[in-house]
Image (cartoon, rainbow, N blue to C red):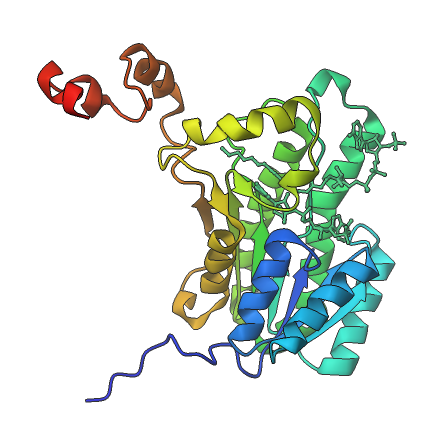
Length: 289
Ligand SMILES: CCCCCCC/C=C/C(=O)SCCNC(=O)CCNC(=O)[C@H](O)C(C)(C)COP(=O)(O)OP(=O)(O)OC[C@H]1O[C@@H](n2cnc3c(N)ncnc32)[C@H](O)[C@@H]1OP(=O)(O)O
Ligand SMILES: NC(=O)C1=CN([C@@H]2O[C@H](COP(=O)(O)OP(=O)(O)OC[C@H]3O[C@@H](n4cnc5c(N)ncnc54)[C@H](OP(=O)(O)O)[C@@H]3O)[C@@H](O)[C@H]2O)C=CC1
């Protein structure tokens, strides 16, 4: 019997997929992956030059890509962008709701404009994109949406505004999966932990200074890569995830686990803080490590 695997080189052939924030970092990487698997990708961001460059990279590699500028926080701009894409390229089969970001700041120093900016970027923008893609296209033929969150459920000092927005987006993911399932639309999310990306490179000051030490707090002992996030997004968009909807997939090297146990790891003097087992090894074995 010839087994018919889901995983094929043209997994997304015939599909048109929007990637917001496709001009850099994780979005750029995801757009490349999707195009390499046959999708026609449509890149969205505010800065035309970045989008144009990535679209050119993809077409040079033999893929299909176009782009459109839009501030995802502006309702009319989002409605117009999606209708233009549909007019030019037909139905939208996938949406990667990746655009976002924040600036690190303690809660006490966040002013109203800054709070609104981050909420509008990471929650309102994602909502508007998903609503328009659903109303104008996916409600008629199905599709898949992947929302970008960040692994901040335990609370994260300096990221209060963003954590609140991402928790909102997590809830919106579940509601959309519930409400839009009848139309064959799947809605999932990814929640990366620490990822070495072009976006992380933009941070300055105390936040930047701590980046080299972050891997110490990840059980896998390293921070992640852009392509490790893209791979999860591609999986959730693909037929391999056909019965997965309303889920949030953490991509964090297990960093979010065992928060209350870290002081114990430290106290037991396991040099990596990486688990109880080492602390309880006989001394003679510890010396050999
Ligand atoms: C265990 C795992 C943990 C998980 C950790 C997750 C870590 C996450 C990492 C990332 O997400 S990295 C990649 C994301 N990329 C970025 O964050 C890009 C850099 N950030 C930005 O560009 C902005 O922060 C933005 C909000 C995404 C976009 O801002 P926009 O250009 O629309 O607004 P601005 O005009 O710059 O600012 C408006 C308003 O916002 C306040 N504000 C902005 N920046 C700062 C700042 N550095 N300090 C204080 N306040 C700031 C401020 O009120 C601004 O108004 P004005 O003062 O300019 O009038
Ligand atoms: N790197 C990490 O460790 C983590 C990242 N994330 C999230 O992953 C996503 C991608 O991040 P990453 O690739 O690292 O960083 P980048 O800063 O490279 O990517 C963010 C992208 O979002 C776009 N963008 C921002 N605001 C808007 C807006 N209002 N309208 C349209 N586009 C916008 C930017 O394009 P332009 O400048 O053209 O507007 C940019 O291309 C972000 O949501 C980020 O917060 C989550 C967890 C961890």
